[in-house]
Image 1 (cartoon, rainbow, N blue to C red):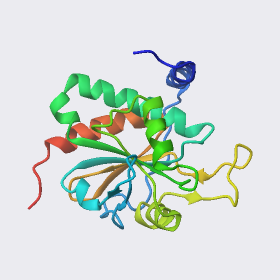
Image 2 (image 1 turned 120 degrees about the vertical axis):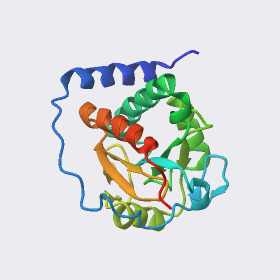
Image 3 (image 1 turned 90 degrees about the vertical axis):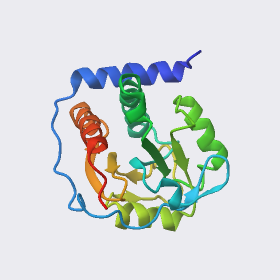
Image 4 (image 1 turned 60 degrees about the horizontal axis):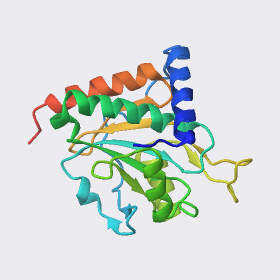
Length: 207
């Protein structure tokens, strides 16, 4: 498959982070271990509404970002995408039970068509990944109150005035319980995400 210069540049940047990462991590937010607050009921890349029931019984890795993000989001997606591909190569059956979900914090610009294009840019498997948009107020409420992840919009987002948002990935179990927070640009944290997801898949479902 041909890869764009943009993808190669991001890959080089990601490798540089892998070599330079100090391995330090901040403490997890206080919501860890709590049930996810609020349903995910948004719109997918095909323009259709995606109800929360679509993810019932699924293990999820959730990330809030936006496609015009100039720095953090591209690196986070490149790193976690590479990790998920390694996981899939090593244990396809287990990896298939994990659903990565990208929720935009810039729904005014991130239309379903734009999200579909973005997914292609990052070679995200459409059979596994979900890129979601929707009502801005609902998305910010879900990020801040549902996942306890910081998010703040600008009146007119641009390259000079980016949207402020968390760079953490959130691991959610099949019951909707938050099991961990992982800094996207910290390779040690992403390694732990992969380890925690593997352990989680081996747990006996409750109930």
